[in-house]
Image (tube, rainbow, N blue to C red; front, side, top):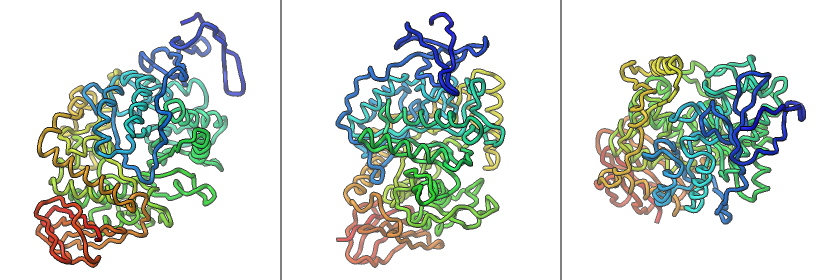
Length: 559
C-alpha cells in the first residue's frame, strides 16, 4: 500500500484521490478523519476478509469465452439453487464448475447462487455480506466467479446471483461511518433499515443499483434473486425496486442479452411483478412461498409455525392454479387477511419449489423433504413442481434425494456474537416445537461439514433412481412446449381431501396423485390418454381409468 493520500470532495456525496502508482493488485484502505482504516465500501476484492485491505481489480482484463451466449429465457427455465461452500467438498467456484456437466444432463437452465458477497469468516450462507461488490475470498474471489460463470455459459447454463439489499451483516459493516446509509425511521428483523427514501438517500440507492448492475455486466450474470424485499422500506414515489428494474432493462438492451429480477417476498403482492404503467415495480418474477407451504404441509402433516395456515388438499389445489394460497383470505397464523389476487399474471411471474435453502436450512436439523416423507411422496412433490405452470426451482441435491442435511452455519470469530447467534437460533425455532438440544451449533465446523453434498451417492441405486425420475420430468417439460411459461388460468384441479387424491390438468397433460392410505381408481374425462410417466411400477392405466397405489403419481398425455 502507498503512503496516506488525502481525498477531496469530487461531487456531492463522493470523495476521490488520484493515485498514480495504483493498478490491478494494489491494496488500499480508507481512513476517516484519522480514525481506524476501513475497506472501500465498493471494494471489488477482499482477499484477507472483511477487515483486510481492499484490492484493485481490472474487470476488463478477464478473457471471456461466452460471446455466443444468448442468455436465459426465464419463462421456460428450470432453476437450481446452489450454495458454493457445500455443493462440493472443496467449496469453491472452480470445484462447483467441475459439476456443471451433472446439471446440464439434468436439464437445468440456470443456477441460482446463494449470496457470494464477502462476509465474516470462511463459511456461512452468505446473507451476512458486508462488502457487496467483492466475491467471497474463500470461494475464489473475482476471477474464480468469472471462471464459474464462463464455464456455466459454455455448458448452456445461466447464472443467477442472490443479492441482499435489505440489511448487512454484523461483522465488517462500516457503512454507517461513511455516510447516511441507514435510517432510524424504520426497523427490520436485523436492526435499522437502509435509507432508501430519506435525506441523502439518492446515493444509497445508487450504491444498491450499481451493485446489481455490476453482477450483470462485469460478471456476466443472467439475473438476480432479491432477498426479502418486504424488508426494504421505501415510501418514495419511485420505489428503489422500480428504479432497479428500469435500469436492468436498459442494461439488458445495451448488452443484447436478457437479464431478469426475481424477488423474494412474503407479502403475496402482485404489484412486485406488474409493470409500472399498471402500478407495479416491473420485476420479472417472485418466489411463491405459499406454494411450498401448501405442498409441504400436505405431504408431511406438519402444522407448527406458519404451517398452521396450511394442510388442506384444497389449498394445494389452489396453489397449483395461482401459486399463492392466500390472496386476500383470512390467515389464522397471521391473524389478519393476507395477500392480493394475482389476476391476469402469467405463470412465469412465479417461482415455485418443494425445497430451498430457507425451508430446509431453517429447520432445527436441516432435514430435506426426502428425510421427512416416503420416496413416493418426494416423487409426487417433484412432479407437481416441475409440471406446474410456474417457473420451477430445485435445491441442490434434491434431484437425487441427498442424504446430507442443509443446516444453518456461521463462522463468527467474536465469542459474544457467536453466542448471540446460537441463542437467537434456538429462540427462532422454538415456535416450531424444536427444543434447544435439537438445534445444532451454527458455529461448529461439523454443522457445516455435514451439510456438504456426498456425490458418491449418485452410484447408489436408490439415489440414481430418484435422479432418473427428475430427469424424466424435466425432459417431459421440455418436450411438451405448452408446459413452460403457461397460463395458470388454463390449469384446472380436482381433489378429494378424504380419499387423498389430486388431479391437475393442463393443456395436453394430466397429473394424478394419490396421497391417501389406500389405492384409488380415477376415471379420466380427457379421452384417450398415454401414460407418460409413473412414479411407481404398480400404477396401471386401464381404458379410461388410472389405478394409483398409495404415495404415487401418474402423468398422462392426450393421444
